[in-house]
Amino acid sequence: MYVAGLWRYPVKSLAGEALTTANLTDDGISGDRVVHVADPRGPLTGRTRQGLLTVPASTGPDGLPWVAGHPWDSPEAARAIRAAAGSHARLAGYRGPERFDVLNLLVATDGAVAEFGADVRRLRPNLLIGGVPGGTEHHWPGHALVIGDAVIGIHSVRQRCIVTSIDPDTGAQDLGVFRRIRQRFGNQLALNAWVLQPGVIHLGDPVTLHPTSAQPGHVGGWILGTPYHVHTPAALGAANGEPSATASTS
Image (tube, rainbow, N blue to C red):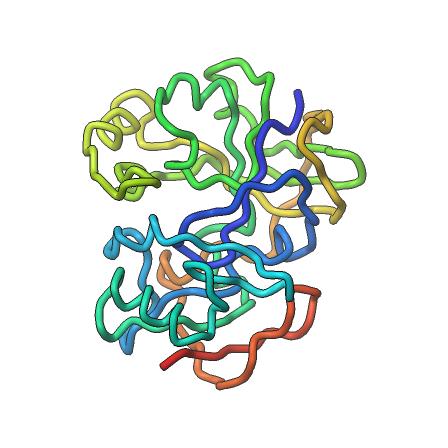
């Protein structure tokens, strides 16, 4: 097996950026989902604001997210977010574990994606593992992926939502894609995972699978009901392990 794809999502629910190298930290891929969209009631995601899924996001030269070609805390980025998610939407920086829906990594396998028969980006994985026979990923929970010095624990199979029905380029919805996941996969596709041991991984790196009894220290985020408490105004630090902070745009 090998690393066939790598993605980071600098802003939660915005488009992802493909990587050739990823720095796995205790907090997932460095720079992943360090900014999110919110309104006065709480976080907003592609589940209810599907236009967000097509807004481009990247990591700028300063290591911080850019939105639609502008720094995340700029007026231009704020306008792009309001256009996609409504007049009360804003961007907020936050590094706590609650920003991840379940765990800090999502792993897909090429065998399951081939059975899925649609763009892998609809699943929004961080890693795509190649050389995996179809129908086997459901047996991976309770195992760990070893990639060089990095070790990734596999916790569970991901329950999928309506986000998979949205074309990541056009924003067009195809409910048939979501129905196919429900009918063929029992609504479970790709793997909730977390970083057991940090390390740097690259496209093409070999991957081995090993049993493990390790369990993550934190499971679940805002989407699964964790209270939304992000209220301290401060600048978001660069993606280099600085303490958590928050900020919002006007």
